[in-house]
Image (cartoon, rainbow over all chains, first blue to last red; front, side, top):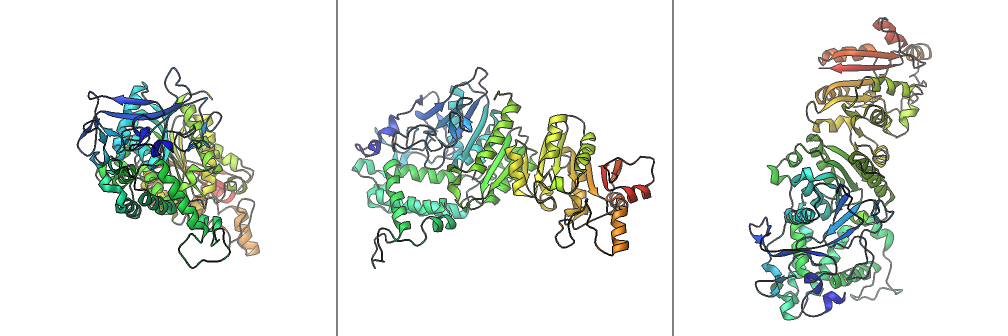
Length: 389
Length: 212
């Protein structure tokens, strides 16, 4: 929290409290936007030990507003890592057994080059001068990080939502480097409805006078109100109507009667306001624009002549897809269409739909059936890869 | 297709024999698709004993989740709808075990099996078995036997056939019967030398190896 509040810039963006790999002008990042990003940096975390054969590496890809702090205390929020229920010593992704890597995506705001990073050409934050970043750009950068570790083939690439898009991109772009792939609660393209929600969020940010055309750091401001509204709207899409009703119903917040005003009378209002407020303490508004855009632009089939199966032609990667019944952001049909494409490509694929009312965010929660599926898939893949238990 | 993961056992006590007959038809290291893979018994048997590259398609989500948790490569899907997504001759063997009679369009499903697999293995309960005939003939009731435990109103089995019916369908689809086995009520194989009418009368289950 201190990191984002202090000063006019975001310290965590340039000098992250995690390891960081810097690429000089000799190794630019080729962007889909048609330009080169250079110099650039990738902030990352690792857990566990890479074995001698370098065959036990798992790459975790984070979601829209996630970061590299999968299984350690987050330096900005002070909260546990975002996937500690799954990743850690003795957990299903057992860091005593696997070498787990997670990097902040390019365009993010926790240490990999993004709009909050200092543009070396101007000495000021990039803001909107950073080219639009795509999912493929993120994966291209991750691939350079994997090269740095001397890992030829990742044992597994996994992630949910935007992380799942990266998993699919990995499997499509570098099939020979991905032994197994586990995309969760995701799609091979962003739907019109999802783009619509993202656009609402972006417009909320841009409508905030403190946004200043993206140059808010130079004005000593941050568009907190706009970003909070964006987060509130998005947060609704991560849950489900059933879960909202179960948790909040029409319960009133710290009061016995309606106030006939516009305070947060209802618990759900108070909850959303809290979500919005805590979010702006940890996330950069411009980065939110870039992250949402990267998902909107994602369309794996379009990159392969409109036929998704061609994105996976000849793949030897073992796939497991997971969806949740109450996820209306990435409904089961999205996963099923990927499964059909993988079938058509002759790929080895498992597909599990998990019954839950917890919506899209179920992938981040303690879901026993999700864990059982991941455990079974990782276990059999490890046997096939010759990794000892 | 089977509706519950445990149906594979409850359909018939001699189910294990049926699985073994199927498994014996499949050489090691084959690529196998098990349509209606249920609780994954056959896939597990094939993986353990034949090191096959096995995949499953199963209607019941619970069955699928259990299979995946056990490390099997299984997806949720419907034999009537989802076979069209598989490429031609993508597998050495496509197995349809005790599922044909539960499909909406058995002819189309069988046609798809022959397209996807170099060979298809189909096992099904024989509706021409003497107990079935007896039940209809004497009691005038739809048969409920150990082999076919459902009442007419709650059965998932909507397209029963006899061994003779199935042989006719194979001819219609241009499929060659490479091997056929009938199991009697005790789960014993009926001698190869016996004529079709004998199989059709005493065979409680049949297993066919087909090619087109």
